[in-house]
Image 1 (cartoon, chains in turn orange, blue, yellow, purple):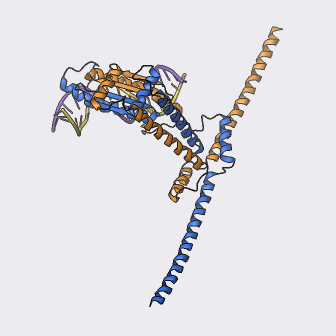
Image 2 (cartoon, chains in turn blue, purple, red, yellow; image 1 turned 180 degrees about the horizontal axis):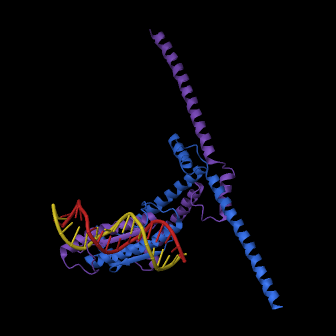
Image 3 (cartoon, chains in turn purple, red, orange, green; image 1 turned 90 degrees about the vertical axis):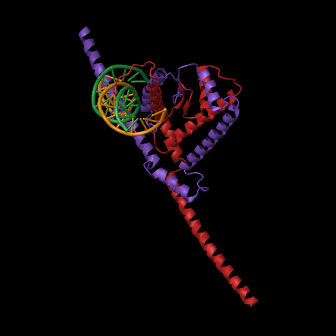
Length: 174
Length: 174
DNA sequence: TATTCTATCTATAACGG
DNA sequence: TCCGTTATAGATAGAAT
């Protein structure tokens, strides 16, 4: 819905991502309210933006819905919490370590333990679309500098114009 | 949306109410999935139909989102015994997210938000010592292939020697 | 009761300020 | 960043099956 169709995958542009979040957040809350009213259902929605801001909607106190959830699902949220949290820490730590390895590989370090298949995948990651990152960075940097120069020039022009204006006024005042 | 506009109030006809619940439930779940993917957000939805049937969607384990909810909202859903575990998860998650950003930068993506200082640092990371990772990878790959060939040759030599040995023994036994 | 159809209504992507 | 607008994609009410 919108001027163009979009694919459901992470929006790479951070500004667009935030804008879309704000819009869709409201849409989701509206839908949640509507279904709870229309169909006499209990609905809770809890959302965290990337930045960690929380939004919640709950047609009845969340705590009650959770109690109900426990009863229905047979999952004892509180009791097994410790185990699940520990498991999650393990998982996230492991992910962390994998990410660090990936970073080393992208920098060309620690390649020895890689299988030929993995090396191929790594080469592809660097070739397909990404080309040489260094070149991309340099180009981006150049662009920034260029913009910087343009702004400086504009600045000079403006202050010159301003100076002329001042001079005119001063002349008039004499 | 539909053949006619409807007012947002309890649907009195019980059959319609259930049909509408089934349809809108799917719609809500779809929207929840979409926003979590598009905007990299954590989203949980818990719904109970009138009949008490539960449906849940959670982009990450519900338990964690509840822990997070508790922290953000200041509402105590249960004992805070495990706050340290939650804090640790948050910490490692945040680190993960930073690592993912670093990976994108190393691949030359998402450079726009970087300050000139950060760009310099990134350039240095790629230049100092690491050179062009792609070249390094290729070289490493070449070496592996070469080693592979050497091992093959060594293998051939060994099996030839072994064959000779066997022949000798066979001769002796006859 | 669940699914399918489709006319119609709603949400929202892209854009402009 | 946060509105408002508009064209278009998507959701769904009502009906049929």
